[in-house]
Length: 260
Image (cartoon, rainbow, N blue to C red; front, side):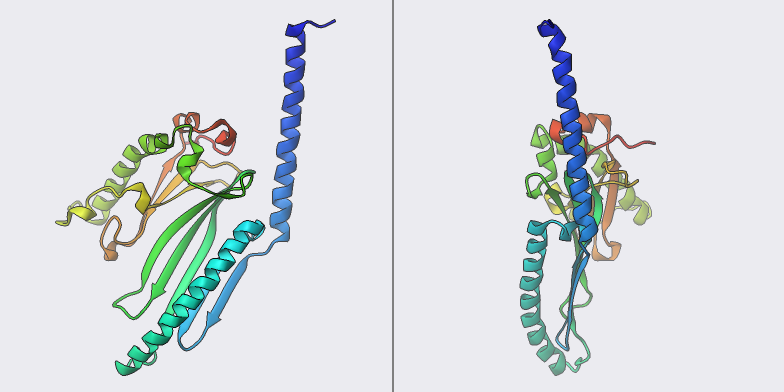
């Protein structure tokens, strides 16, 4: 008869096999749903507004996320159409009748794992000003929880994410700004400071598409890290062993150290 010490490895092996089967089953279900879903693109163009809202098949395969995007698309279309009609009256008075407002929001995949779907969007509008406006955003969806979560929610301590990544991000941003500005600093302090994470689109990225995140992307929209003419600032920093160690155990399998 086996003693307590003999039975423990056997139980552990059983648990491990059960966990592997569960992971494989979840992976198959996720990919089957994505395979059956199709990317969605909503276009509604008229004399008053050119409107586009799109999201990929992986997002359309998640009912709650698909409903969220459809509701936002409908809400933004109605709001933009009202504004477009009012703007069109102004354009005619200004003898710019050929000008039309536009709204575009396009979601794309930054990466996905069995549990997490990481999305990025580019949003652009024009409402009659000197130039179009654009901004960038991100969304991290937890398939198990069936809701969006913050990147900081992945960590044992929410503050750990910023403490581990911010020094690296701010240094890389300063280097990129100096490169674009040919070594000079602007007289405007706000365009030399490091933006808060609340102002950035932050998303885990799977660069080699192997089902695990190896990079964290930080995108500052125009005006967040520099003047409009400098455009957006997209900085990527690698996932490290130290970063993975600070992540909650249930999410660690979704990340890997970036190979140099």
